[in-house]
Image (cartoon, rainbow, N blue to C red):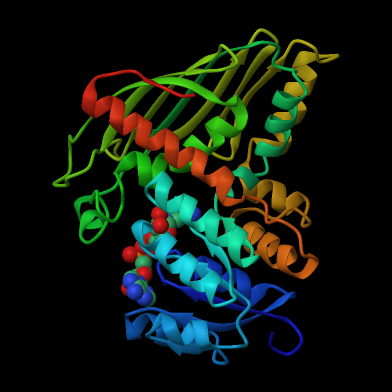
Length: 347
Ligand SMILES: NC(=O)c1ccc[n+]([C@@H]2O[C@H](COP(=O)([O-])OP(=O)(O)OC[C@H]3O[C@@H](n4cnc5c(N)ncnc54)[C@H](O)[C@@H]3O)[C@@H](O)[C@H]2O)c1
């Protein structure tokens, strides 16, 4: 605690800067410290937030008694080691996506959470895109009827420069366009569609000098009986869309990331009027919704705030390790199917 508030620290200052900003702006915590191996990154935070302590060694974070929560924003394969160490030192953790690159590593985080009694949350901030709330509610209320088909397509672009370093390595990234970029959408898929029954996939490297894939394509069936296609790439120049498209006997919902594109539900009193209202509210994405209603919070800010509240109110954070493990299991099954040419069946 610092000044009577939850003390926050961030390790890893790439996307970790979004955590830094969210913690610095939160009224419920104090940004206590940041940690990175690169002094220039630490200096940048110190310039922006002069009261912040800077550490080159994670062990200093663990020893700092003012710190209650640590955001783990390190290369993906480092998440479990650092999260477990932090919980064993009495810190709560908020872990970036993917929770780690293997189910076994993710399970180590869950095991440590239960054993230490500390809190562990995982970042999948796209669940908090404003448009996802009505979509999830419509799905859960059965407004789409019997789910028939879904289509998820992460058509992004990354240039050669992006792949210098740990990105695109099996050891540290655990994959390419799927494990790193599309894992967000894998999480949304399993959240909306329920348990996976089977996966059949192909993958390849098309436009980058990397060891992992830059394209995957899968046919996925669900225990509900529905099917989906799921594609991911970092070759779609200049970066096209994140399609989330749901087709049920009760109607259709289509979005591109946080932007609603189509809302046609047969059970509406007036289908066209409902669609018009929904497009007006959610057709402009998160920024438009936040502008219209300042109580709506999206992105990293929403997840950092949720983690702080979980600690203050002694409740579970929004996404527990047991939930975040699901997308890692699916991603690795896609890779296994693509490598072996076999269909992977889930229990
Ligand atoms: N939620 C999102 O939208 C989102 C976006 C980007 C990245 N990520 C995830 O965040 C994680 C980090 O990705 P990134 O793109 O920020 O990577 P990055 O390489 O830009 O940043 C990682 C940082 O960790 C630091 N670091 C490495 N080893 C360290 C150690 N032992 N101690 C302290 N610092 C150390 C590096 O110096 C670097 O500054 C990944 O798991 C990635 O998947 C999430």
